[in-house]
Length: 120
Length: 113
Image (cartoon, rainbow over all chains, first blue to last red; front, side):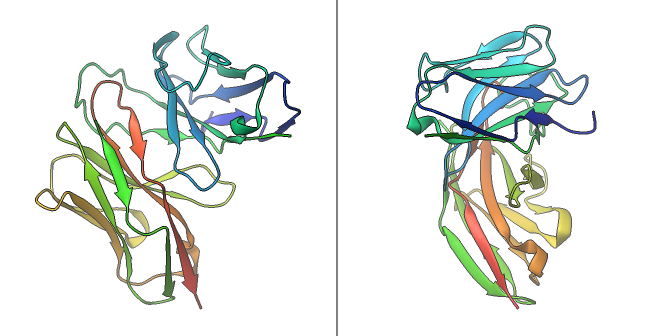
């Protein structure tokens, strides 16, 4: 597609419910990132995929958060037993290149519009 | 480790006057630095990036930023603000394996007519 597509754009969940957020990256993009943006704050890194491999999940805040990208394209971020502190905008971003080493350069990410999660 | 400090949470300017959004960074690596803009209900859009080439970087919509290593700063400027510039701006540093971006807390720019 022309850009990174995220769905749903808005999700309201009751505390304790499970949610799944979907990201369709730009076709052919190898690298995919998830970020969490709480109200009034900058986005914070959650996890990173190269193709189907999850290479970095150091930003996931708890074991209730799980991300997958089984075929190396679409990715799903799942949050189990949602809590109020999970309320945030979840941003997905992708880029075409495969990163090989530190300081690989300023490869530019294309961000989706985000999925806004509100937990009541 | 990388970090970014945006020195102003809100900036208000009049249309046609200069814009200055301030950013200081900290990085263990030779950093790559970016400015992104976020309009309400829109995705983050890249304004410009610094990648160890020219220290004065020109971006879209008339924005510029200057990398000053001695001051560890990467301030964003524009000579003349437009109403359409009203948005939230993020200074971002990247470094290390994985191109993990570290965002500042953001500066909300208000443009008065």
